[in-house]
Length: 519
Image (cartoon, rainbow, N blue to C red):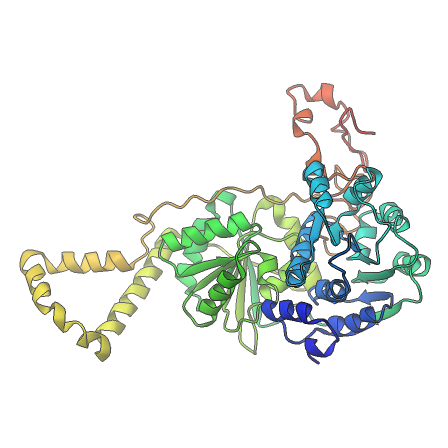
């Protein structure tokens, strides 16, 4: 079945075509048809199966662009909320749909201003949504569609009270779409309590990663990453490679750095104009590029064959994104290689990914500068020998005969050949210095219980600053709507720490350090 057979409107279909999608995944095919009929749906499927499009396309399809807020999507983490917002915006752009994201760790005033400027769909984390509702900045009285994404994750992170608060703020007459990788009793209770005769769509799990993909990790410090990346490229000589960065700024800087050093590289992310994005993808597919640098969202849905290497410059805390990343290679029976850069305090995310994918990553020692130089030298030798024996190229060299003789008469042959090699070899001692802005490694508060979640603790373990079991990175505080990053860090790390929080070092489960203004 094609997307064109699902009953979606032309403006939504045009966005699907631009995104490179043709055939829906099983969860998309079954969910979209039910949702378009107005049914409540419980979708159960593993990560990496296209659930955002499954709930997003039918929701966007029925949006009236002349109306106000008509749909909300509740997501467990800031990262997932941003990714979902960008993907929904991409699908709804041709129709003129406004999609906003709200989450802790960012200015609530700016988010309120964005909401006032108009929104048809809002994607957000539970705590920040609760805060906005209490401030009457997010009013859900006209909501027609309520979507809970990664519901089991939100329950594991202790968001049940926040979810119920948000759900009760929506009209009773609405459509509810709930997606969850697992189906614990708590999820079933939500279905019974808040949904009307929900249709259960269950997609049988299959192996998440191909056996044809060799997965490695490299322990490296932030300031060493770019150098390690170029060494790996020089030694491994990928035919086609994708480098994944966490942010748009990161993608731009890596791309500029690779170009400066002579690599055929281009980057894509959400801020890139559609025409430029298509041109980059066309060059990549037509072998005019060797390296594509991309964010997770920009790379989703890309139908690219022949990718031999995937480099995760920044590890993702979202396993779905990891599956999407490495899924760019190892296709059509061909082998592929994935290498993830990781710092010491990010190892928890790596172990969580391993548990989810049921495949252990092997540690890899990065090539030395000398090994990278020798590899680049070997490539230069091969290119020179190939060009010298190519009749088409040698036929065009006759015009330089006299100039070559003049140079030979004035300079030593070895000096001239050395100059040729210098132009072709990527010498780490003489190449330009590339500065990549540092980003803090992802914090991890413990490996949790169920394979590590987007929030760091996917159920089970408690982090030191978690308020309720689970927590982790980007954890929204109940009622306050703030992530841990939202706090005023200056209040925490004063010179006399004991006067600020005298019990901060006590090992009590779930203990929280609070500012004076926290309740």
